[in-house]
Picture 1: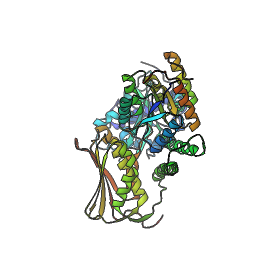
Picture 2 (picture 1 turned 45 degrees about the vertical axis):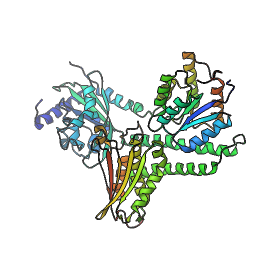
Picture 3 (picture 1 turned 90 degrees about the vertical axis):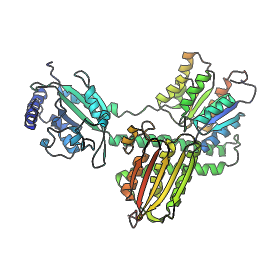
Picture 4 (picture 1 turned 60 degrees about the vertical axis):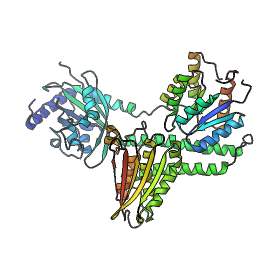
Length: 50
Length: 374
Length: 131
């Protein structure tokens, strides 16, 4: 193997990826939960609960 | 590559030239705030940036060249075994990141190091395998991002937003019942509001105490404290948690136990944390025993529950961000040890012989605190 | 809509939350047939009473609410289990919905909103006796 590894690119990647590591678990609101539930009901053919 | 240090230093010079060839910015690594270091294929450090040296209390590159990360970080395991050679090292994030990286894919892992001095360091490790022009063998470029503060914040946030909101929502709901004419609540609404708002305040205080304990900002207030009184107060505080598990809780004070001079609130928190851990680790119907005993010039509290600790838990029980309860929770044993050892001049340790169970001990000298408010 | 009083089992380890939810349920004219402060007792109460609805927290001692949900759904795919919790992370919500929870209500909602959501769930219940 004789690959030139671009150090600048690697360091850039390290800095960019900090955004990923700062992300927190996604917390849902009640509205978002209702939407998920409605999508689930449509997909599974459950009776709608409004 | 030469296995001697001279060979490694020469290799370092070769590597440095190689990196300069690639990026033509001699001080580029030093300008990156994150810890960066380069190792040879045997995982010995050949190059490191200023941030790395400062993180580990070094001033010159020569202090780390040829050493392993474990020895530079003063890892308590590497102090007794070669870095990577102990059984526990299989869990090490740094080694996992190295093992999983390929020329096309970086290795990522979380790494937790407990140092010989008792400090905890949390890092996000990234490892890139690379071949640089002129370097005789593949090298690893590694970054360490300090995640200790972030993890602490995550723990506090999740605990705060979950547990505190749980209580606050309950208080709000109970208050709504007071003003909604449609709801005709049963008797006991007013005391229920008082108790739940008291719990809410206590929960916020718990978190504030943890932060204060870590930053050294806690102030102690010393008074005469009855060990048996403290033991009974702790059991009372967690009565509901014990009842929900149908536990049998026993308080034993063997013989006369003289009062000790200590900060009662901090003692309640530390002992409370150990007791809560025991309750939460118990299975239905278990017997949990809280004992206090006088031993010459010290008082020893012990909390027993019949569930032995697994090997993995034993290794990590006092680590800051370790938990068996899911990400972001569970700092009880850590906080108990921190408060006892930093503010009460005590010691915390545990025995967990299988199959008997687990006992956590908290020993305090009879004069446990400072003599006045500081 | 069901023509008899709706029978509800309630599971939460906080005594004041059980008090609050119990009063909400009664204000709607439903019956609380059992209360549990841990997951094992919640499952036992479900099996004993076969209620129209079970309202369940997730962070329960001995057995968590999502574990109880999975066991109930294995025994009876028509069971109506409503998660009533502060846990709001997307992974847990999705997992509970995929396992078969009828709905997922956050305790941070106002009393009025919780009552409305319960009413909507009950209105959608089938008219036959029992579950």
